[in-house]
Length: 208
Image (cartoon, rainbow, N blue to C red; front, top):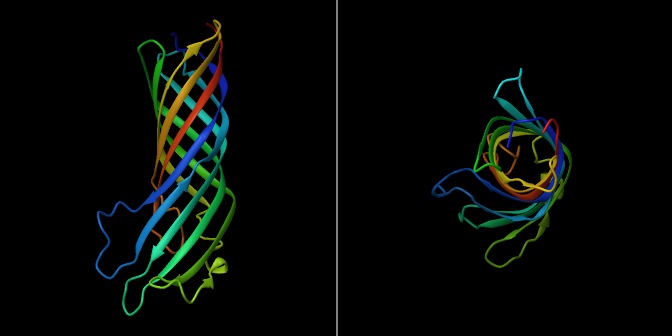
């Protein structure tokens, strides 16, 4: 397949998880766990060669919706408390892929840098005594603005194009985004996102 200009759309489902890359919690430190939920990601994308060369870039701009449940348990001295936080947020994202590899004719690997800008967030939570679920309190005001306004990461994308016509193709796609910046400004300030995406692309290819 020749390296030509193309434009298209993508849509699918995305699943977030969060990590600080610690192998285990330090003695006396809080413990953290997350449970992501599948939600939607969609947008437009395009490719173009530069200066009539063999080098080409891919760009994308879109919207993603992320949902997850964050559980934080404090150290057990003198009594442990658990915070159960529900996180929903929407981002506008821009992805620039400077590294693009095609092989097996229509298979494609893209490696790029992703910028995310927070559109809206809805965060709520409760705190309770861990051992007996007593002393329940609402901490929604404490956590309501815990998401960072901007974040970035490295996204690795894999797809394979099936041509319906000479100029039209559809591609199943898998990608993973490794966060480079901390996602939260409170509670778990060192957490970074690891985000999986399953979707499909539809592209129109010019000049084929």
